[in-house]
Image (cartoon, rainbow, N blue to C red; front, side):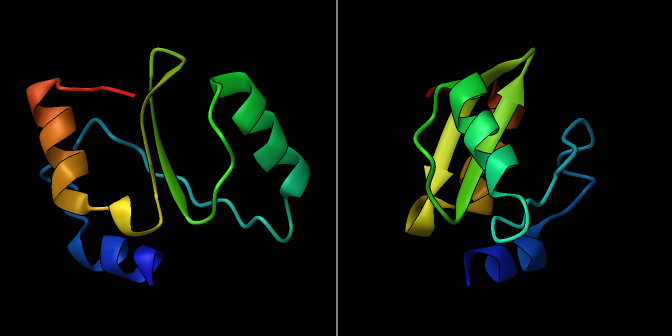
Length: 81
C-alpha cells in the first residue's frame, strides 16, 4: 500500500535530483541488511531511506512514508534523521 501510494504521487519534475530505487526484500535480504548497517538505520519494511552524500538523512517507514514529506525535505533542505 505504501509503495502504491508513493508511486501514484511521485513526480520527477518535483524531485529531479532524486533517483528512487526499489529493493525486493524477499529476493535480496542480504543487501537489505547491508544497507541497514551501512546507513545506520533499523531495517523496516516498507521503508524509505533518503541518502545524500553517502549518509542517511531521512528514514521513514510504514504509514510515515509520505511523498509530500519527502518532497518538502528535499526541496527545503530540511533533511533530518
